[in-house]
Length: 597
Image (tube, rainbow, N blue to C red):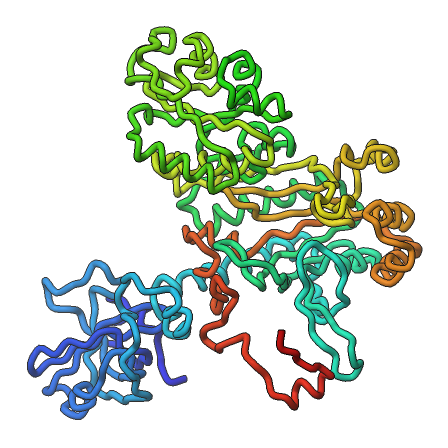
């Protein structure tokens, strides 16, 4: 080894010890005769002192050293002089008096500060990600990710799960997103696909009798990126045989509870995890992944709104829509500008507009609310009793602001979700040190495509219906509830899973319901249906997202901050410059001819 110790492990008990250290120059300070260099490695920082009386040659080398040079030094650990201790460093009580020094490599001036936490344009950070990884924040995030993955592996290994690697080059089958396709050189005109998830493979592992499987699976989906989505991501893939839904939920609650309390003991987990049906959570929060660290529940105001003379309400209800709203605590004094900002959020979310009702000044009860206290463009169309009744349904007090949206559910739910998150953000209602997990169950299995009129699987077509709903497949597919479930936390979906179909006849029936013809079914899924005919056990699974989990534990706002080399918002890899053109020779080998459009 080129060193005897890591920089961060030196303490008072090492005083008098001869050490050799290696790392990067974090900071250099020339005090006219004495040179101080803070040496940094992955573990941390230690102060080294170059003194001409101790080693003139070492001092001469130090004069050439600059920030981010890679150096090795040998010397003796000393106690810092009284009054010069640094309480911000774990090594702040000691320093190393250098006797020998060597420059292992020089460095150009970095494009941004590495030894200071300052705002840096993200694309610059991603272009020089190898430098960004040296910065404390990124380094800690990557080390946190390592600890999370190790904990999950150890947790499942202790419970009898087997880690199995599955293929990256597989068959392209419809699973919800676009596939990344890989052309075959040896089979002209044919393609592999990168797996969106190992869905069919892990089910075949259950047919293979492994019973308990997991892996840190790489998944690829050609879809638009966002803060919590990348073209490639990592998930903890888990599948189990001879289980019911409750078995999987209990396992995941134990995993996440112990993960948070072990890896981030300063954080609090709300337990036990509450359970919501899909219908219930949408009614109460207008989202299937709400942040449950705060209340702000959505109230259904349709019955009251239908009795008013406000035509926006009555027209929406007549058209089959609903009127729903929530209370923004203490926001009754919002200015016109602030109200316009909220209305713009609603319009951008696809709803037709926002009605606000100010409930006067704080103090007193709703019974003491007078019509003159109310401020709203709809005030003259509403009676005081109607306003008070709406406020009570929204759990509002005097001084609050009612935020009301009318229209079809698919229009108003996204708007209400955005409003709820925005108000919580403005009022700082979410405790950053709390994790509010929950299970969402009983999702509808199918939705009808507006474009094709065909039934589509809401999760994927391998989900087993509730046994009592199987007869509805023939009469009312839209009413079928699946045995699928999500884990949500702090406004994000962290995991999705289901009990799977293990019977070939039922699986074939689902495919036909979705519009697949017999020949298509055989071509796309024949291998799986045949496997089910050889004694497939009942099985189910779940796939927690590693990137989102680590993002929440790290307190970051985007998964790009917890991935070593992520893609940009436009799916570009700025470090490598990918995607990029390839040579004509490569295209020829793959039997591909590019055409200009």
